[in-house]
Image (cartoon, rainbow, N blue to C red; front, side, top):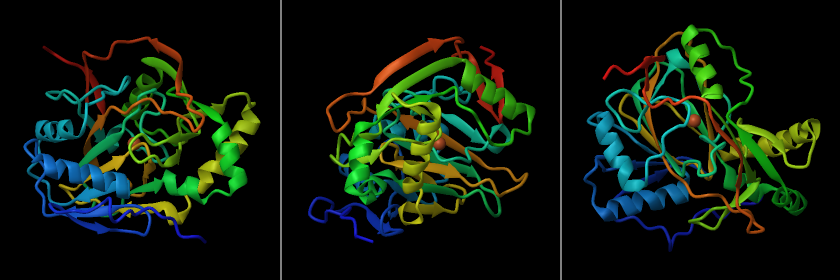
Length: 320
Ligand SMILES: [Fe+2]
């Protein structure tokens, strides 16, 4: 297999951070830094740089962070983007409580790709970790593109795909809380966006595959052909060579470049509790290799969720 040139040493140097790669293609652990909303500009620049280089970065022992401090830190990296159909955690402006009692994101996806400006970064902080299990895995969608043969690259660059929030959750749904959350997820809004299958990353210029579980179909293809081609390209994305796996401890923070990765949680921890807090930052509208931008196909708001809150897996109305 050919080696992929993902590292540009002259472009990526670090003075303020200690950066340790975790695999040959994706992921790095960053140490020597205490995350906060008061980080120096140079430190923020280097975190950005590490994200572009390694696609997902991990910080240990950030237990000092509160929800609001996590939001303040996130604000240094970009503009928060709230989810259109998942209520925020109470007393926060942009934070989602990712709680195993309310569901488990155990299939491969890129966050919120049914939006045209889907997140550029996601910042996830672990609050409760199972004793064992509940790891998260990320895949490098740029490396996946680079590994395609010239023929498949040409095919990929010609395709556009519709992503939707009204997608078929295949995984088991056990609790009332999960059912309630999933119903709201797929009914509060009905959004469909057509993205190029290959987008040109706005900061690195790298080409990257845009797929994952919000995929509905390829434009111009029937469902059967769409599914076959989805499987073909998705399988390239999740090859072992493109993956890093993280074992969570309380206080760990992961940040990923959501434009160049997919991820999923591993649902192997039974009834143990797993809680994290998540902030997503607005991305720009993807552009394909041919210069065509993503396009909104449908955007229907059925329910205003601004007065709803979600925590411990439950959805409730905020009492003001
Ligand atoms: Fe996710």
